[in-house]
Image (cartoon, rainbow, N blue to C red; front, side, top):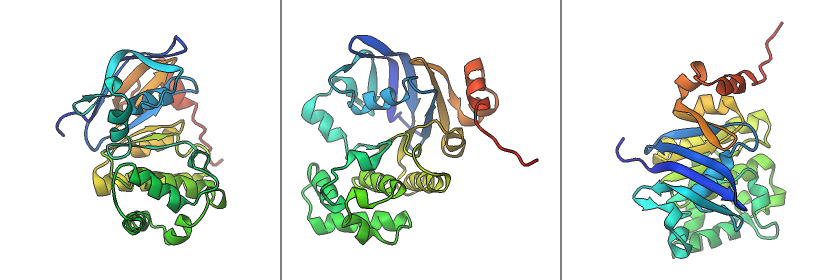
Length: 261
């Protein structure tokens, strides 16, 4: 598998001086999928936002390091960090529709985003987008590109989010609870499409989710977070079926399972 694509070592993150992540260490190899689980407020989203340099003005890495390949992300600023976001590391947000500009079409926003990194024509960007939509089994790509975010369903906006994150073919894709606001059928579509990205492009994925079923289906490794700490980390099968920590057992057992009488 080669050198790790992402290495987190003894990471500490603070917001307004208060620690929200403490002593978190994990590695992700090329092509692997990592599922990051835990209750609300456990630090899951903070972990991937720190890796993307998206902590905001109140957040800061106050200890440890995050390395993307040979670069220490925590030491990068401004233009250096911008060059990583998009071409190297992509992000699918929890609610893509809310993160897009409501008064500009999907096509216009896609064009502007790609132009930040490449000098290519609008037609070439459209062709790339249509190719990705085709790979995602979406037949109405032209209509989607000409639509405004509010004209699309939540599920379609999430699929747009995957396309926009993958348009530059990043090696590492972060997904921050991308299925949490979707119904079960659409969740399955979004999960399958992210898996397709790995199949087609060898994309490494780190996904934050509350959905244990998504982790069991997608992930090669699982990181279990609790109160800002990594309490269990290992291969999916081992963590899901032979958890070592009581918290992990409770988390797995808390999943709603409805059986026929």
